Length: 139
Length: 139
DNA sequence: ATGACTGCAAAGACTTTGCATCTTT
DNA sequence: AAAGATGCAAAGTCTTTGCAGTCAT
Image (tube, rainbow over all chains, first blue to last red; front, top):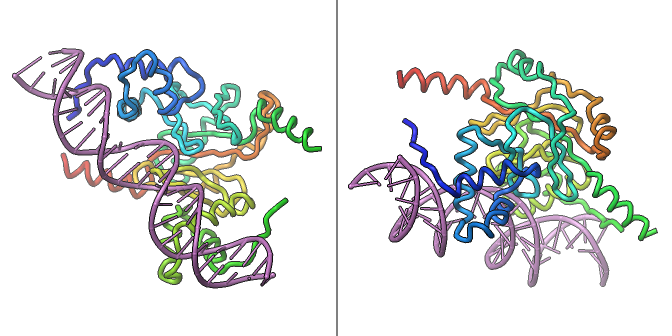
């Protein structure tokens, strides 16, 4: 038995905020983003709706970065890059995920794969420049 | 200037606990594992050493599962399976990671890749059996 | 009117940290 | 003796939740 879902202005705004960003926002980011136009928005509502969207399959978590869970409105399989310096999460649409691997996992190990995730951790362009500047200053 | 590290019995025990398990333990798991033989061990020490091991490159985080960070003493690139039902994290040594992709990310996007991570989320064998039993009971 | 949605604040879970004490070198 | 490592407990962060009031249907 599923619980009925009603329309809610704030829910719509929350989903819209996620969809309009490619930064893979956190709950806190969404909250700060919407607070000016929705002064009575509460963080609890953001969290509750994030749970709902995930249950619906409308959004997906892309993992926890620096202690905060990050979300993606694009639920098609695609790769990500996570900058370990600034915490940026960036879509890598040009890096293909081998579609056959999920099937291989199911065959070889007998697991049921719901979602593959290919993520690269490292330093983004901006932070590389920043690091270079800092190094030059020290030398 | 680096800070010197001295020998410590507990540090050794913590690393050994991680190395002797293939379950990708959490801080809590390590703590409970060692507590019987080290009654005066504190959770803070476990956390502090986990940070140290990661800085040294001795261990790696494999991400946060059900709110708890999980660690791996095997720092060679290899794939993982995460069961979203029981939280198990399992090595997939037979699922190769395309070694060329990291290079492609660096070339195409100009990022510096330090670590690729290929993870499959789904239901493990044990939980699939469990689910089947539950479904049969309902019907 | 009913049941879903929300704000608010308290509670929870996990992790970090300050300080006094103990260990290693 | 000097500096690192630890225990303990408090504090910090992020997230969840109970309850009373509000809103959609």
